[in-house]
Structures are given as structure tokens and as C-alpha cells.
Length: 142
Image 1 (cartoon, rainbow, N blue to C red):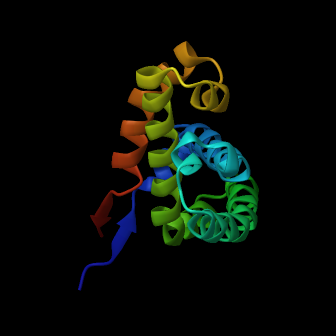
Image 2: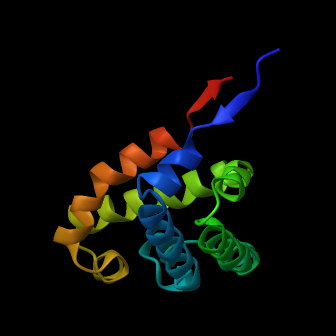
């Protein structure tokens, strides 16, 4: 039976994909830390908002751990390959960043604009995000 090799490791290490992943993870962390200010939660019931906040508090340390794993593994492709178990989490952070760029652009809401920072620079990231989403999900058979 052929073994599947995660091609995302090559993208992260050799093609510089780690840059957009780290940017997305840091954005995701910022988003979770400022969740209470989100216009999407302003209308949420107090109980629902508190549940989301408690979940966010649990995810932030996972983001920090994932960032450290990426930074510590970049010198060794074997170590980068172990990040394949984090693909769903990496994809979630990319999706969050992408969605917030669109929200900043489409709504102009101060919360999203402040969250993504320079909107023109963030819009340039959209193509890179789509590439990253595709590449981190690629496997080949050996």
C-alpha cells in the first residue's frame, strides 16, 4: 500500500508558505482576543457570547503552540512534515483571516478594518491565502 506524503510541508518550508500561515495564526489569535468587540456578537445573547469567549480562551494557547511548532521546525523538513496533523487548524486560521479581510472590505466596519490592519496589503494576501489553502491539503502517494 502506498504511503501518503504531505506536500504541504514542501510549501511551508521551501516555498515560504509558513509566512502566510504565521500571519493567519496571529490574526486568528487577535480575532479571538477581541471577540467581545466583534459586531457579530453585539446582538448575541449574553449566554451565547460567554460560551464563545470561553472557547476562544481555550484556543489562544493552541495558536501559540502551533506558531512555536512552525518556527521550531522550519530548519528540518521531517519536523515540518509532522505539522500535517495541524492542517484543519491551519485551514481554520486561513479561513478566518480571509473572511475578515472580506468583511473589512465589504462592510468597512471599524472593528474589521482595525483587525486586518492595512486593507490594501491584506487584500494582496487573499491570493496567497487561496494558494495556501490548496497546498496544505495536498498529498502525494509514494
